[in-house]
Length: 349
Image (cartoon, rainbow, N blue to C red; front, side, top):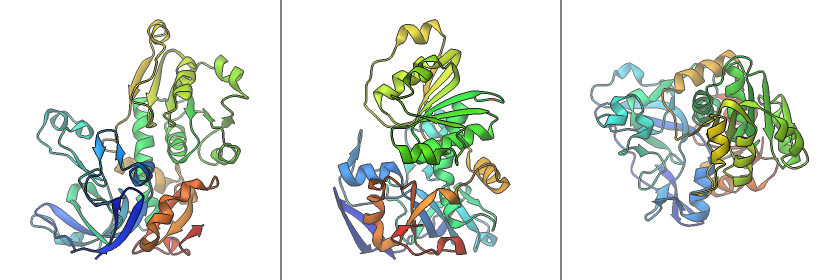
């Protein structure tokens, strides 16, 4: 099979590799579409994210849809031919985190495209059968792949304890900010305020769940006066985090999603005096069934987020797509199973 491989920082190479075989309890998936994530871009540009360092050639990509073409021992052969979206987590299932339903925190987790585990910018991958979720024909390959970043939004909304009628402040109008905005609207939030410095992103975000879009500096007074039920940061930028925490009402929640500095100052006295719950997001738990239901019901729109499509030979271009301010989400189309994924690759949708 063909695989797009990060051979060193900033260098992608198309290679021939053996097609993997499914082990007991696994399925073999012929990859249809793979979304490009900010973590893929970070590994490509910097060769590391925190303690995760690329020391050997690595296949990037973890937002995946495809079709089951073979099954391992113990898996129903009727699954062959099934279109699926794959949760990229492979927890140990034995540790305390796994046993208590928090497998996203498994210390022995294997995760696509997290060194040293290869990802999905290739033609075939194996996955645990119970992490490959059947998707209906009404869901495109691209939407099925984007269930992964939607899962981040769903989990963030869960951690933010969003409920009907809530006001939610979201920092960052990029792909994850858009996923969070849609997820909190689906949970009943009626005022979703998203901040971003980029004009085009603020203009676009009202199509993806936001009721209002503000400039972090020009609208600073309005933000300072806000008392949101929840704040979700999708930027990792220290000023955005601090401003957002100060905009949370007493008893509200602040959730950190964006990757930023390892350490930053926190207004401890404010957090304490307002009894603000400050928490983070690290992947997700049991979000694919929810994502499929939200997308098929029309509560969430994923196809409209795809602005650029590329082929497997163009992964390097896909990893540089975010340099375009008009880019929202880039997708690598490998073996499309739906007609919505057959638009010309290599540029804007």
